[in-house]
Amino acid sequence: MHPLLRLLQDGRFHSGEALGASLGVSRSAVWKQLQSLQAELSLPIHKVRGRGYRLESPLQLLDEEVLAANSVGPQWPVAVLPCVDSTNAEALKRVAGARALPFVVLAERQTSGRGRRGRSWASPFGENLYYSLVLKIEGGMRQVEGLSLVVGLALLQTIRGAGVSAAGLKWPNDVLVDGRKIAGILLELSGDPADVCHVVIGIGLNVNMLPAERVSIDQPWTSMRAELGRVLDRNELVLELNSQLSRYLEIQQRSGFSALQKEWQDNHLWQGRKVAITAGIQPIEGIVLGVDQSGAIRLSVDGVERSFSGGELSLRLSDDS
Image (cartoon, rainbow, N blue to C red):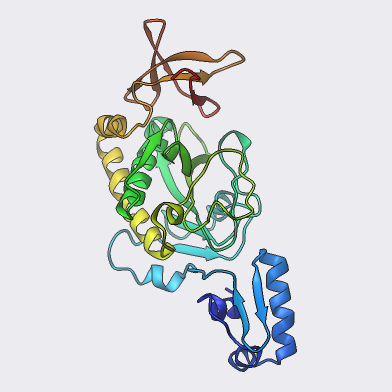
């Protein structure tokens, strides 16, 4: 991470002279670096005569050393990058040269963050979690049945554990708070789906981003900071997310998604609600009954139970729900 940014992350004023002394450069060099940071990362930096420079708000930067020093939970290798196109894309690039699996890729910022169905994922610098976990899957695609729902449970427990008790699940891979999106999941596969492949579990979690910020998002959203009224330590969240993922993935590997089916349904915000699912040109309306043992959504459509699954499906509450 940029040394100047680490000095400024506390959100306090630092004089150009003090910053220059810490970095071993001149005050003019400090000013040039500040301009570069503003342009490159879109970080607002305030300058006040007689006081110096400070960030608009403090940052809790991710730290590889802090994450590696953790002795509790899975000992997954973690790479923290300042900026990538997307952590999923970066993780897929690293699969061939990986020394150990699973491994995690984190970024402070994404320039082309992705959600489901080709949507972009807003990824401002140093505020949220942009997280990708790579797993090796043997035995074909049946091993990943219900995987996005399993990940959703791990993510939900992480969010609730930090204090956002109103969070709940929306099929197949969103976490909502009072109808607003706080997190999403994107799974991507690489390799032979009939034999040995790799799955990248991509997670975007709104942590310290505030609704007042100039972020272009085409749906209602919130963040953990907005819900709790405080800045959260993202390193602690990563460690907790790793632990929850390890626990839930082990249950799925041992017993399949059926062992978690009831827990998922109990936390589904739209259970029993009237919804519309887009599975083609014409939306299909029905009442949510739950999910089956493979993670497909079960709907009562005109009194007949039907199941739907697939990465391109879209589920919405009906207007009269």
